[in-house]
Length: 469
Ligand code: ADP
Image (cartoon, rainbow, N blue to C red):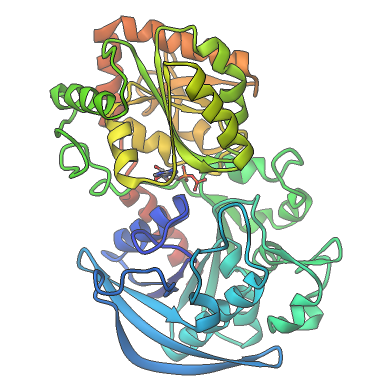
């Protein structure tokens, strides 16, 4: 079985979130059982020398929407695995993936249409059996493949329904999507073109990145306007829980850490905590350290932390926050970190610092309003930080309440209602647990041994691939 796995971002070449992590780890894990080629755009900022990116000699011109777009195919290598890159100047020659922070390039429809048409061309030329598409950037390839009469099956994975790729109606023509698809049951959405809808309508199967999210998005609260549409397609919709690449996220062998450690030998974790606290100018090693890592958006529940900050500041606990995003949230978090000495904030994207924080932390805060899957909580558990989460989506599938059935993997603190007092209550329970050192240590070690690996996730995708092809 030959699979073309397409994503707009793949770690370590380009990453804005969890999609990039999965798009790296999943094809790699699948390659033991299937012939999977991972493909993404060759953005200008990708380090070509570092990844030995070279031209394959394959070139073609795409003609659609009255335009002609020259495409060149490259390959690159990372950790022994090969990746395919699509180069076209309009798609790739930018400083950012989708636009400057908080903005989107105006021609993102045309940029990613070039990518989608190129995917269809590659599928045709190289006789792939399955085209695995991820999120809105690649969704129209499902309808384009069908219109091109390809025999390849298409699988569309929704990593986040909140980003749908919605454009004005004129976009249809310039992106080369046939006019007949501008229909309520296909790509039309309140008079505009919706790429996510196109993908859902035309893919042979649709997955979300956790089982709970597949159910939640069929309800108005989480459906982002597509709940009714998703209910109509529910026979082909299922949820497969994401996993993490356990060689990238490995506290025993992580080059970012001051010391390595694992379940049964947590001394290194203590060194990591001391070292991070020194780095961020905090002392009081004996206090529990809570971290938050992620995009500062409504999705991630940042406003809950902001609302709770006054209360949390009174606790015997430390809070360290890393992320970037909405300037309003950045300002508020800055004010909080300047005002309260037990709050630390680092604005920016810093992969190595994130690893040091997971390793140092006693607890991870993840009060997401909605969460398609969430990787942070799985990474946190692997690094021995106990998650404190809102019980939603993938968080509900991976974090189980303490005191419940003890053989279910993934233990932490959950709150049901999106309000700051519920968060503070959970933090208080976590602080109380921290005082019971050996009990906490048992939970930490239990979580560290849980299997959140990408291999487990890959075996589920493989079953689906086999059913489809
Ligand atoms: P998202 O909704 O952003 O995709 P996920 O939980 O699926 O969230 O994945 C987030 C990934 O990005 C994790 O690997 C997390 O550690 C990482 N990450 C998020 N923000 C930052 C940041 N500011 N610096 C470093 N890593 C980050």
